[in-house]
Amino acid sequence: MTSERFAEYGQRLLTAVDEHLEKGEKAVAVVQLQKRAVWALPLGIAGALLASLVVNSQSAIVRGAVIGLAIAVVLINGTSFYALARTNQGELVLTDTAKMSQAKVRGVAGRFDLDDSVTTKNGLMTDKVKLGDKTYLVNRQFRKMLAEVLES
Image 1 (cartoon, one colour):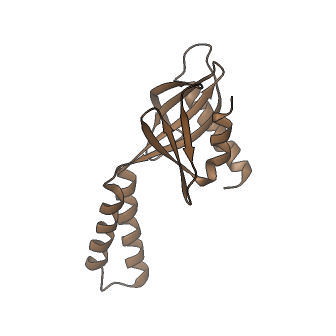
Image 2 (spheres, rainbow, N blue to C red; image 1 turned 180 degrees about the vertical axis):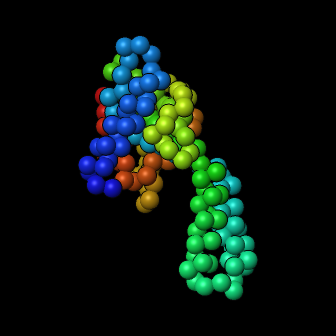
């Protein structure tokens, strides 16, 4: 994603979060988070292996498409999406978003003070963010947005 597309996406997400905040409260920075079920990746791999057996006699393109689709369906169904926003009130707000359009916020899932212990751990493809007792994933491409949310 280009920086222009990141800015556009971030603005859409900020607007969507604002619709679910209390009167006088406004989101000033936002980042997308994910939480993946422990069964999602193993089941996705098993689905890919099963799909490869079913379409074994097809062309490589068809096999690749079916295998990719099997993995995608399982991972999307096993992943929950959230937006974490910092508000003008000095609070972190975690919102639940739709699976197929993460810029569609469905409601507030939790609130945290900026003073609360929020820890991050960088990874190769995704970073981990611990809010309270739950750990969420952040795609590496959103590191800058995460830093903006967590700065006080």
